[in-house]
Each structure stands twice: as C-alpha cells, then as structure tokens.
Image (cartoon, rainbow, N blue to C red; front, side, top):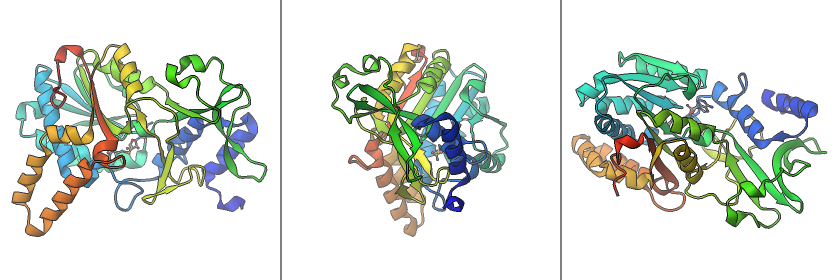
Length: 366
Ligand code: SAH
C-alpha cells in the first residue's frame, strides 16, 4: 500500500500524526502549492494534454477581447504614460499573448505597458517566459500581488481565485465544526469534523443561514485576496476577475478535484489533481468594496463577452478563415457563451473592482 501513495500523501500523513487533523484549507493549500510536491509546482496542467482547459485555451477571441477591453479601460483611466498590466495565475500565458496582439492596434496603450505576472508554479513560469519572450517586451514575475509596486495598474485574474484554499464547516448539535482531513481507522484519508465547535460561528453567517439544520455545510475562502484587490485598485487601479462561482453565499460544498479532464476524489493521490472551489462573488465584492474599490458587475461571462463584441469578432475571424476552420470558431463561440447551470457562459461570472473615480467601466454599463 504505502508505495502507492504520492510523496505528498506521506507528508500529509506525517503532519496529521504530529499536529492532528488538518483543516481542509491547509490540505488544499498543500495539494496545490507545496514547494516540492504541490500540483502547480510539479504539473503543467492546462490544455488537451493536461488536466483541464480554460477559456483562453478554447479560443483566441477570449484574450483578444480582453486586450481591447484593457485598452479602453486605460483610456478611461486618463491614458497614464505607464500602466502595469498584472496577470494573476497566467497559466500558459495564452490570454496575455492574445490580449497584447489585439492591444497593439492601440499603439499609445501598447507602449505604456509594463507586464507583471504573479505565478507560483516554476513550471508554468518557464512556459510563460518562453512564450512571452517573442514579444520583446519586459516582463517581471512575482510570487504574490503584494509584491507589485503601486501606480496605475490593470489586473486580470481568469480562473485564479478558484485555486485559492477554501474552508468548510459542518453544523452539528453543538454548533459549527471546521471540516478537517484525518486518517481513518482503516488507514484511508477521510474528511471529518474538528472535535470542538468554532466559537461564535453563527454570528459570522448571513442571517438566513444561522438556523441551518444539522449536517449543513458552509464554505468560505479567506478574504485576503479580495482585500488586496480592493486596496490595490482603489487608487488608480482596475481589476477584472473571471471565474466560476455563485452570486450569493449559500449552503453546500463545491470543492472538486480534476485530473486528466475527469472528476476524481479530492483525497486521492494528493498533489496529482487540480483542486478548485466556486468563487463566492457576493463576498468577494463586499470585501473589496469595504476597503474602497468600486464594484462593477458581476455579469455572466456570456453577457460580458457579447457586450465586448464576441459575435462580431467571430464573424470577422470566420471571414478570414479557411472553410474547414469556420465550424471550429462557431463551436468555440458556443462553448464560451453556453447557457445552463453547467455552461461556461453562465457558470462563469465577470466582476471588476476599480478606483471609483473611473466611472462605469466598458462592458458593465447598465
Ligand atoms: N489563467 C490561466 C490559468 C488558470 S490555472 C488560464 O485561464 O488559462 C491557475 C493559475 O494560477 C496557474 O497559472 C497556477 O499556477 C496559478 N496559481 C495557483 N495558485 C496560485 C497562488 N497561490 N499564487 C500564484 N499563482 C497561483
């Protein structure tokens, strides 16, 4: 048995043996970003050969529209001579490459750009470096958003926040208990509940969730990223967050593991699967607003892309494409804007946080 375990599983078992059951958030953080065995440290996860596919990998239209959006936003910011373009979790840098190609048509914007990438994965950083080199533009890499100096900035985060750790609590007779990863008597990793209830937890919940029945699960994420986005944008900044998630906090758990384009058990082979959970856009917006950012949206990805002109862009690409490529453009458009609870166009939401003085941002008009 033991030799079938991933090296990270051995490490997690060791930590549980020393310190006791591990909060789910710590487990998720270790699985994704453990400096030696974390999923993002050891894998290049995105694309057909990887574990999952993202919007910029589906079609060049996605990044191109964001590039033109950034140019319009920059004009609305008063066309500052220097603007930092920051991407959180750039993956294979596809979004940025497509965005910059489109943005090049607005020459004055293009020359104002300095690129900053926030990336934790040395593997993906190497991919980004290789692919961005060709542009001949200076690019800087940072481990966290807090490392990037102030000044005018446009921040883009596509499928970044879903990879940040979540906590869960389960309601029991004596209150809410944090959910933890433990080792069961049969030796398997299991999700259990901490022995003691979380003190005064009911008081931190939305009113309508306080009387939840036993067995209910409540999930939340640290508001550190929301506060940092609010702080970073409230003077001269704009952030665009695109991710899958919900508009209002509710009950239920959304942690999921994906490997090789299929769902798997989050406790199986830690470090070998991508773990993500829904983004709670309501709470993200509140926290960013409290610290001084102005909130735009959230909109569905479908509405946002239509407002940015994805239909026209698709028609133009089709008019220039070889006949056997036009069906591909149609199917990419359909996939990015698909409705229904599981369709990317509806499940994915778009939210912007900005300095209040910039007014309503393009795409977010009422
Ligand atoms: N935005 C890309 C990739 C999404 S995958 C796309 O749309 O294709 C998530 C990305 O976030 C990866 O690049 C991953 O390495 C990075 N990442 C995950 N957790 C991170 C963290 N805590 N800090 C910095 N980067 C992180």
